[in-house]
Each structure stands twice: as C-alpha cells, then as structure tokens.
Length: 132
Image (cartoon, rainbow, N blue to C red):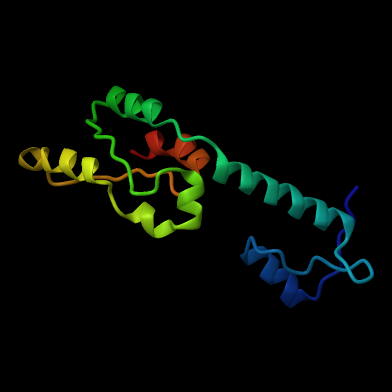
C-alpha cells in the first residue's frame, strides 16, 4: 500500500507535468521506502536495457519483410563496453562499413534512415520496425 505525500498545489501541478521524481517526501534523512524501491527498479531496468544484446539480424529481417533494403554497418566501437567508455567511437563507421556504403552510392534514394542501438537495444527492438 502506497502512502501519498501531501503536496503543495504548485508541486502537485509540477508532478503532473513531468515524469521527473519531484515531491517524493522524506523518511528521516532518506526517501520513503516506496520511492526508493521504485527508483531502484527503474535503475535496474535502465541498466538491463543498456546491456541487452542487439540482434541486428532480426532487425534486418523485419525491415526486409516491410520491403525495405537494409545495409548493416558497424561503428569503430568494437563492443558495448568500449562504446560506453568511448561514445565518440560509436559515431564513426569502421573502414569496412564505409566501403560497403560507398558501394551503394549509385543506388541512393531521396531518404536514408539510420537505426542504431545506441544506449538501448531494447528500445530499438521494441519500436524500430513499427516506426519505419
């Protein structure tokens, strides 16, 4: 059973306007147990999303089922751990990927969409196909 904290009207309105954790209350020098447990669960879910494996093959197959051609490329970050330590490597294509894209230069259309796993492969798997 959650106990609702009595908030001043301005703080209650702010809570309606944002998903941020505002007006959580206090239990001594800490947060109330329910707020702390909610935060801990959300944090664990976020960590799981960041470290989830990216299944590029299923994404390419899903795009093909929509009649869309996909070219799989890789960044200069050799793996997830490297990307998290050096996000700049994730913004550059490796040499082989640059060559692969250059070979498609004569087939370019008016639009190219890039789908990247970035910080959440979970989000890409959940939404990329439906979005495209």
